[in-house]
Amino acid sequence: MTVWDSLKLDGCRALVTGGSRGLGLEMARALGEAGAELVLVGRDAAQLETARADLAATCAAPISLLPADLNDPAAAEGMCQRALAEFDPVDILVNNVGGRRINVPTEELTLSDWQRIVDLNLTQAFLCTRLIGGAMLKRRRGRVINVASISALVAGKQMRGRAYETTKAALAMFTKCVAADWAPYGVTVNAIAPGTFLTDANRRWIRERPELREEIEGTIPMGRLGEPREIGALALYLASDASSYMTGSLVVIDGGRLLW
Ligand SMILES: NC(=O)c1ccc[n+]([C@@H]2O[C@H](COP(=O)([O-])OP(=O)(O)OC[C@H]3O[C@@H](n4cnc5c(N)ncnc54)[C@H](OP(=O)(O)O)[C@@H]3O)[C@@H](O)[C@H]2O)c1
Image (cartoon, helix red, strand yellow):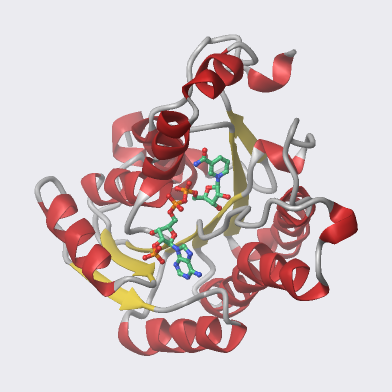
């Protein structure tokens, strides 16, 4: 097998949560271009359709859509049951949904807001891993990729909403523990820790406050933010046979941001 062959995903099925926009869309594109059938999860059905049309230009295998709000644990569980019923087997699970959403200091953070971020960044990833990842064990083969953040490793400067850092750190540790448990079953579990990428939301934010771009870029040795497409090949590596000896890793992709 050549190294190129080890990156091919023909005959595999990948489920990408939050696959309709941003980093999830670009990871889905990479897996789809390598030959995987795709199942995209998001809340907005119209946005999922837009993503499917976009991906279909370069992804030949079927692309299916599963609308669901994963912030609600019951809905997340329901999505997993549907995925297992309609799209079995799922060979690759990308737990990408997550976000900060709340930007208030800890002394003002309400329990319900805290719980909402725990559910958004952690509980749904646990449920998808338990149900969809768990179904991989009997096949003795599978890939789980969790999207954490460099915020799992450092506190964001001039930011609030510390449930974000806390839950991303927990997701990174969850990755390691499950990787150890599932290694004997041939199921690898790895995590990606992105720095700041120019997703649509971040582009809007920077447009509204242009002074921030220079400030953020000044903290990155490469001197620029990431393009969403730059995460695709890393996801493909972790999803494919190319990463056969890698499990429990947290792979930082941040233009060198954590070096200073
Ligand atoms: N962007 C960055 O610079 C950056 C940096 C570090 C880490 N990350 C992490 O990378 C992941 C993706 O970030 P992103 O910036 O690409 O996010 P994004 O642009 O906000 O995209 C989020 C995706 O998730 C879906 N989504 C959001 N909430 C959902 C929910 N409750 N249920 C189901 N689907 C939901 C969205 O579709 P709908 O809105 O239609 O539901 C969309 O497809 C997150 O875990 C984030 O924490 C991002």
